[in-house]
Image (cartoon, rainbow, N blue to C red; front, top):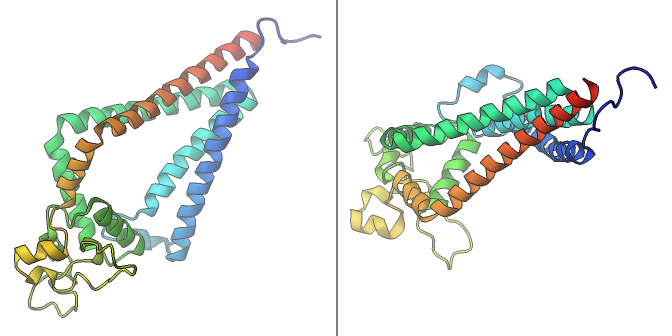
Length: 266
Protein backbone atom coordinates (compact mmCIF):
# COMPACT_ATOMS: atom_id res chain seq x y z
CA UNK A 1 0.00 0.00 0.00
CA UNK A 2 1.15 3.56 -0.72
CA UNK A 3 0.47 6.93 0.88
CA UNK A 4 0.13 7.75 4.55
CA UNK A 5 -1.18 4.67 6.22
CA UNK A 6 -0.48 2.96 9.53
CA UNK A 7 3.17 3.88 9.88
CA UNK A 8 3.10 3.89 13.70
CA UNK A 9 0.86 2.46 16.38
CA UNK A 10 -2.80 1.96 15.48
CA UNK A 11 -5.58 4.21 16.71
CA UNK A 12 -7.03 2.71 19.89
CA UNK A 13 -10.39 1.20 18.91
CA UNK A 14 -11.34 0.96 22.59
CA UNK A 15 -10.97 4.72 23.15
CA UNK A 16 -12.45 5.56 19.75
CA UNK A 17 -15.67 3.59 20.18
CA UNK A 18 -16.03 4.46 23.86
CA UNK A 19 -16.03 8.18 22.96
CA UNK A 20 -18.35 7.45 20.02
CA UNK A 21 -20.84 5.42 22.09
CA UNK A 22 -20.88 7.86 25.01
CA UNK A 23 -21.46 10.83 22.71
CA UNK A 24 -24.19 9.10 20.70
CA UNK A 25 -26.19 8.92 23.96
CA UNK A 26 -25.29 12.55 24.70
CA UNK A 27 -26.29 13.58 21.18
CA UNK A 28 -29.71 11.93 21.33
CA UNK A 29 -30.35 13.38 24.78
CA UNK A 30 -29.57 16.82 23.34
CA UNK A 31 -32.01 16.24 20.48
CA UNK A 32 -34.66 15.11 22.99
CA UNK A 33 -34.18 18.22 25.17
CA UNK A 34 -34.33 20.49 22.12
CA UNK A 35 -37.45 18.68 20.90
CA UNK A 36 -39.19 19.12 24.27
CA UNK A 37 -38.26 22.81 24.35
CA UNK A 38 -39.47 23.50 20.82
CA UNK A 39 -42.66 21.49 21.43
CA UNK A 40 -43.37 23.54 24.58
CA UNK A 41 -42.83 26.79 22.67
CA UNK A 42 -45.08 25.55 19.87
CA UNK A 43 -47.82 24.71 22.39
CA UNK A 44 -47.57 28.24 23.82
CA UNK A 45 -47.60 29.80 20.33
CA UNK A 46 -44.08 31.21 20.66
CA UNK A 47 -42.85 29.69 17.38
CA UNK A 48 -45.66 31.40 15.45
CA UNK A 49 -44.90 34.71 17.18
CA UNK A 50 -41.17 34.90 17.98
CA UNK A 51 -41.50 38.41 19.43
CA UNK A 52 -43.52 36.96 22.33
CA UNK A 53 -40.27 35.49 23.74
CA UNK A 54 -39.58 38.86 25.35
CA UNK A 55 -43.15 39.33 26.63
CA UNK A 56 -42.75 37.16 29.72
CA UNK A 57 -41.61 39.21 32.70
CA UNK A 58 -40.18 36.19 34.52
CA UNK A 59 -38.05 33.19 33.65
CA UNK A 60 -39.32 30.77 31.00
CA UNK A 61 -38.24 27.22 32.06
CA UNK A 62 -38.24 26.20 28.38
CA UNK A 63 -34.93 28.06 28.05
CA UNK A 64 -33.36 25.40 30.31
CA UNK A 65 -34.30 22.66 27.86
CA UNK A 66 -33.14 24.66 24.85
CA UNK A 67 -29.79 25.78 26.29
CA UNK A 68 -28.92 22.43 27.91
CA UNK A 69 -30.17 20.55 24.84
CA UNK A 70 -28.19 22.81 22.51
CA UNK A 71 -24.93 22.35 24.46
CA UNK A 72 -25.46 18.57 24.67
CA UNK A 73 -26.24 18.39 20.95
CA UNK A 74 -23.11 20.33 19.94
CA UNK A 75 -20.86 18.36 22.31
CA UNK A 76 -22.41 15.05 21.29
CA UNK A 77 -22.11 15.83 17.58
CA UNK A 78 -18.45 16.91 17.83
CA UNK A 79 -17.44 13.94 19.99
CA UNK A 80 -19.47 11.36 18.05
CA UNK A 81 -18.47 12.38 14.50
CA UNK A 82 -14.95 13.33 15.58
CA UNK A 83 -14.32 9.86 17.05
CA UNK A 84 -16.05 7.93 14.26
CA UNK A 85 -14.33 9.82 11.42
CA UNK A 86 -11.09 10.28 13.37
CA UNK A 87 -11.41 14.02 12.78
CA UNK A 88 -8.86 15.83 14.94
CA UNK A 89 -10.55 19.24 14.45
CA UNK A 90 -13.87 18.03 15.89
CA UNK A 91 -12.12 16.15 18.71
CA UNK A 92 -10.08 19.24 19.64
CA UNK A 93 -13.27 21.33 19.49
CA UNK A 94 -14.94 18.77 21.78
CA UNK A 95 -12.04 18.98 24.26
CA UNK A 96 -11.86 22.78 24.24
CA UNK A 97 -15.66 23.18 24.55
CA UNK A 98 -15.78 20.69 27.43
CA UNK A 99 -12.81 22.47 29.03
CA UNK A 100 -14.56 25.85 28.80
CA UNK A 101 -17.68 24.40 30.44
CA UNK A 102 -15.54 22.87 33.21
CA UNK A 103 -13.75 26.21 33.75
CA UNK A 104 -17.07 28.12 33.89
CA UNK A 105 -18.49 25.62 36.40
CA UNK A 106 -15.36 25.91 38.55
CA UNK A 107 -15.45 29.71 38.38
CA UNK A 108 -19.15 29.78 39.26
CA UNK A 109 -18.53 27.49 42.25
CA UNK A 110 -15.70 29.65 43.58
CA UNK A 111 -17.65 32.89 43.09
CA UNK A 112 -20.74 31.38 44.75
CA UNK A 113 -18.63 30.47 47.78
CA UNK A 114 -16.86 33.84 47.98
CA UNK A 115 -19.90 36.03 47.29
CA UNK A 116 -22.56 34.08 49.20
CA UNK A 117 -24.49 37.18 50.28
CA UNK A 118 -24.56 38.55 46.74
CA UNK A 119 -25.79 35.18 45.42
CA UNK A 120 -28.52 35.19 48.09
CA UNK A 121 -29.61 38.70 47.04
CA UNK A 122 -29.70 37.64 43.38
CA UNK A 123 -31.73 34.56 44.24
CA UNK A 124 -34.15 36.72 46.23
CA UNK A 125 -34.48 39.12 43.28
CA UNK A 126 -34.90 36.21 40.82
CA UNK A 127 -37.68 34.54 42.85
CA UNK A 128 -39.57 37.79 43.44
CA UNK A 129 -39.31 38.73 39.78
CA UNK A 130 -40.89 35.39 38.89
CA UNK A 131 -43.56 35.79 41.57
CA UNK A 132 -44.71 38.89 39.68
CA UNK A 133 -45.04 36.81 36.49
CA UNK A 134 -46.62 33.77 38.19
CA UNK A 135 -49.83 33.85 36.14
CA UNK A 136 -48.14 34.87 32.88
CA UNK A 137 -46.74 31.48 31.91
CA UNK A 138 -47.96 27.96 32.77
CA UNK A 139 -44.44 26.49 32.78
CA UNK A 140 -43.18 29.16 35.17
CA UNK A 141 -46.25 28.62 37.35
CA UNK A 142 -45.58 24.86 37.52
CA UNK A 143 -41.91 25.49 38.36
CA UNK A 144 -42.78 27.82 41.24
CA UNK A 145 -45.45 25.42 42.54
CA UNK A 146 -43.01 22.50 42.41
CA UNK A 147 -40.34 24.54 44.24
CA UNK A 148 -42.71 25.64 47.01
CA UNK A 149 -44.13 22.15 47.47
CA UNK A 150 -40.74 20.41 47.44
CA UNK A 151 -39.02 22.76 49.90
CA UNK A 152 -42.22 23.47 51.85
CA UNK A 153 -41.81 27.20 51.50
CA UNK A 154 -43.73 30.26 50.36
CA UNK A 155 -42.24 33.25 48.56
CA UNK A 156 -38.55 34.19 48.62
CA UNK A 157 -38.31 35.05 52.33
CA UNK A 158 -41.93 34.58 53.40
CA UNK A 159 -45.56 34.44 52.32
CA UNK A 160 -45.85 38.25 52.21
CA UNK A 161 -43.63 38.25 49.10
CA UNK A 162 -46.81 37.33 47.22
CA UNK A 163 -47.88 40.95 47.66
CA UNK A 164 -45.72 41.53 44.58
CA UNK A 165 -48.22 39.65 42.42
CA UNK A 166 -51.20 41.64 41.14
CA UNK A 167 -53.62 38.78 41.88
CA UNK A 168 -52.43 38.02 45.42
CA UNK A 169 -51.57 41.44 46.85
CA UNK A 170 -53.63 42.87 49.71
CA UNK A 171 -54.32 46.30 48.24
CA UNK A 172 -57.88 47.64 48.35
CA UNK A 173 -57.86 48.04 44.56
CA UNK A 174 -57.31 44.31 44.03
CA UNK A 175 -60.65 42.77 43.07
CA UNK A 176 -59.25 39.26 42.60
CA UNK A 177 -60.70 36.40 44.65
CA UNK A 178 -57.09 35.47 45.41
CA UNK A 179 -56.53 38.81 47.18
CA UNK A 180 -54.39 38.46 50.31
CA UNK A 181 -53.92 34.77 49.55
CA UNK A 182 -51.16 32.50 48.27
CA UNK A 183 -50.97 29.76 45.62
CA UNK A 184 -52.10 26.27 46.64
CA UNK A 185 -48.45 25.13 46.61
CA UNK A 186 -47.89 27.20 49.78
CA UNK A 187 -50.50 25.21 51.68
CA UNK A 188 -49.54 22.61 54.27
CA UNK A 189 -50.55 19.17 53.09
CA UNK A 190 -53.12 16.98 54.79
CA UNK A 191 -52.11 13.30 54.26
CA UNK A 192 -55.78 12.33 54.42
CA UNK A 193 -56.64 14.45 51.36
CA UNK A 194 -56.27 12.67 48.01
CA UNK A 195 -57.42 15.63 45.90
CA UNK A 196 -55.46 18.89 45.92
CA UNK A 197 -57.53 21.84 47.14
CA UNK A 198 -56.42 24.63 44.79
CA UNK A 199 -58.36 27.20 46.85
CA UNK A 200 -56.66 26.39 50.17
CA UNK A 201 -54.58 29.57 50.03
CA UNK A 202 -57.51 31.98 49.68
CA UNK A 203 -57.44 34.75 52.34
CA UNK A 204 -54.57 32.93 54.11
CA UNK A 205 -52.57 36.11 54.79
CA UNK A 206 -55.56 37.89 56.35
CA UNK A 207 -55.32 35.52 59.30
CA UNK A 208 -53.06 36.14 62.35
CA UNK A 209 -49.53 34.79 61.93
CA UNK A 210 -50.15 31.97 64.42
CA UNK A 211 -53.13 30.76 62.38
CA UNK A 212 -51.22 31.17 59.11
CA UNK A 213 -48.66 28.58 60.22
CA UNK A 214 -51.44 26.00 60.45
CA UNK A 215 -52.66 26.38 56.85
CA UNK A 216 -49.61 27.57 54.87
CA UNK A 217 -45.82 27.38 54.89
CA UNK A 218 -44.48 30.62 56.33
CA UNK A 219 -40.78 30.04 55.71
CA UNK A 220 -39.25 31.50 52.55
CA UNK A 221 -37.73 29.43 49.76
CA UNK A 222 -34.28 31.06 50.02
CA UNK A 223 -33.66 29.99 53.67
CA UNK A 224 -35.29 26.62 52.99
CA UNK A 225 -32.97 26.09 50.01
CA UNK A 226 -29.97 27.00 52.21
CA UNK A 227 -31.11 24.48 54.83
CA UNK A 228 -31.61 21.78 52.15
CA UNK A 229 -28.13 22.51 50.77
CA UNK A 230 -26.55 22.15 54.22
CA UNK A 231 -28.46 18.92 54.94
CA UNK A 232 -27.47 17.41 51.57
CA UNK A 233 -24.02 18.96 51.19
CA UNK A 234 -22.26 15.59 50.83
CA UNK A 235 -24.62 14.41 48.09
CA UNK A 236 -24.48 17.73 46.21
CA UNK A 237 -20.68 17.85 46.46
CA UNK A 238 -20.47 14.23 45.29
CA UNK A 239 -22.62 14.98 42.24
CA UNK A 240 -20.53 18.01 41.27
CA UNK A 241 -17.26 16.12 41.78
CA UNK A 242 -18.62 13.23 39.70
CA UNK A 243 -19.60 15.58 36.86
CA UNK A 244 -16.18 17.29 37.03
CA UNK A 245 -14.36 13.93 36.89
CA UNK A 246 -16.45 12.84 33.91
CA UNK A 247 -15.56 16.06 32.10
CA UNK A 248 -11.85 15.68 32.85
CA UNK A 249 -12.04 12.03 31.78
CA UNK A 250 -13.74 13.03 28.51
CA UNK A 251 -11.10 15.70 27.79
CA UNK A 252 -8.26 13.25 28.48
CA UNK A 253 -9.78 10.53 26.28
CA UNK A 254 -10.36 12.96 23.40
CA UNK A 255 -6.81 14.31 23.64
CA UNK A 256 -5.46 10.75 23.80
CA UNK A 257 -7.38 9.86 20.65
CA UNK A 258 -6.12 13.01 18.89
CA UNK A 259 -2.53 12.05 19.76
CA UNK A 260 -3.08 8.51 18.40
CA UNK A 261 -4.57 9.84 15.14
CA UNK A 262 -1.77 12.35 14.65
CA UNK A 263 0.84 9.66 15.39
CA UNK A 264 -0.72 7.31 12.81
CA UNK A 265 -1.47 9.77 10.02
CA UNK A 266 1.28 12.30 10.72
